[in-house]
Image 1 (cartoon, rainbow, N blue to C red):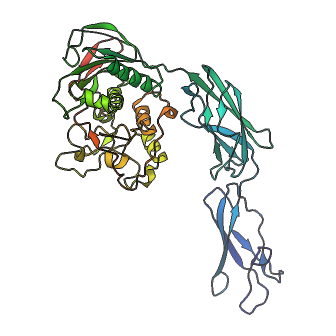
Image 2: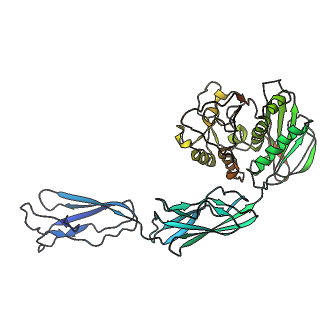
Image 3: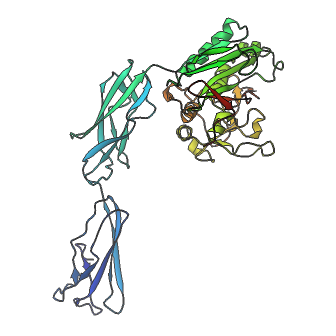
Length: 469
């Protein structure tokens, strides 16, 4: 090549080239094109072959190779060049548009724009200005800069009123704009707790608090289903006859003797589910009356109630298995098996919390046989997730946060959720975390008895679970 980038060929004696063939080839990951053969004119004493029909429309790095085969020895030369994206030509909203969220909270998915040039190349380094145009919400920032994929995003907190929220995104210095819409709602999910044993005000308040907490995390309405059943229809422990339409979920709650102090603290789960979407319809929570005094005195009863209510909503082996999210279920003879949950939303939440450093990769670790019967396959793994509320151990003397991970797992199960309502949670996943206080083993706490499907008309269609997908 000469200083201008032209391919130069010379004869072995250093003179000008005779008429020779120079083959020019382009190695490309994109859609560049090039006519590949050039002829050096005999009257070009400099022996230059110039071509002008190179066309590149995809930003990337290319290699151009010129090979001359007319002399005794084949010779070749090559060089690389990089084509950058041109000026912004368009902006679109590929992620985060059309969401429904809880008023006053961030949306689950930040609104994200894609800036491209006229050839659809992503434009890196473009500043995008975001402005709330309706609904009274707010943004984490008024602008963001596009990354290597041409994308930029901000967190969007919805306004305090229900209804439409709107947002515009404009490439700075241009008239190139796209818009986002979102709908703000108050929670449409209700948890109806009915006691079938006598409870005092402290116990009742713990259930009320847990129900209100979950209703800030699960926010979407689910289908109303009519049901008529005789007494003792669910767990056979004193449930009254029922003839009504269930709006969201009904939980029968009781405080009864189970096995004395320090054994099984309680158990919970669902006994009826909607056949249309597998979402639980009726469930049960029961607690050992012998354990209530020390749990309440230690300030841990509310956490236990919150945990067990999560099982009624579907966090645990039963629904995880039915929907195909529980992988490598544990066996007593294989305590080291890598049991895990593989729902995409939960994996994304786990990774965002720092789970990418966990050597299992692309999965959420679930308690294996080391957790013991009734804990394995139904909880997050204690040695990895530590203080997270939905592990099989309650950490005494420390907070047990209900994190985005557990909320995202409910999203995988089919609920409309509010990730921003989760507790703040931080964990180093590269190694087992140190214990906090004396952990309380929530052993045998997931109900695994008969479960019945109910179709939209209220017909109980059978016992068991939906087919695994």
